[in-house]
Image 1 (cartoon, rainbow, N blue to C red):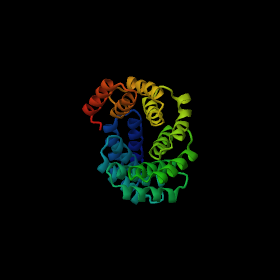
Image 2 (cartoon, one colour):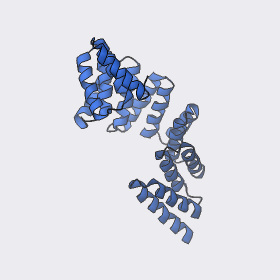
Image 3 (tube, rainbow, N blue to C red):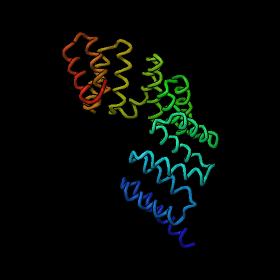
Image 4 (tube, rainbow, N blue to C red):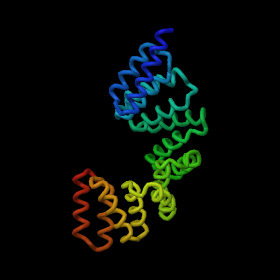
Length: 243
């Protein structure tokens, strides 16, 4: 049918706009596509992804939910639904969505990653670590999965293992602030304060307004007896909304 062909063309227009980060144009195109062919799941899923990128989580959830209704065997729709629910703080429902995704596709690394994030929020650290491990088994090159695993190891007090988890990333992308912020925190917890401070100072140069980095810097400086510098770091962290 002509309407189906036009719907497919509008979906392609939306994909192009999304790739080029023209998100409002992408939403318009996906909207045209779903209007012309309301029984096609993929444009709804794409609309959900776009809303999620724009941090419009209620709208993302509605779009992903419609995609799941239209194609209940597509694991990606459930993953998107889980991400939106997680962002809305609806953790129990998010876990249920990720479980649906894994049931349909046991090799969905993104579902395990989302599950790990939710379990971490719920302080179920051992379970979160298992989820991140599974995600890494499926897609070992994904840096976000490794960061998540390192964070859970830190929460469990397994600091050396956390450092070992991060080590491969230094070779792959040695200039990332998030990497050095985590490394600095782990070194601090191990009492290796000079090394921790060097890592945190590098992270701060890359991202001067990260409150978590400043809090860790304050703790490290205090442990080194550099009280005035520690107080300055804490004060700046408070200005940025840190604890």
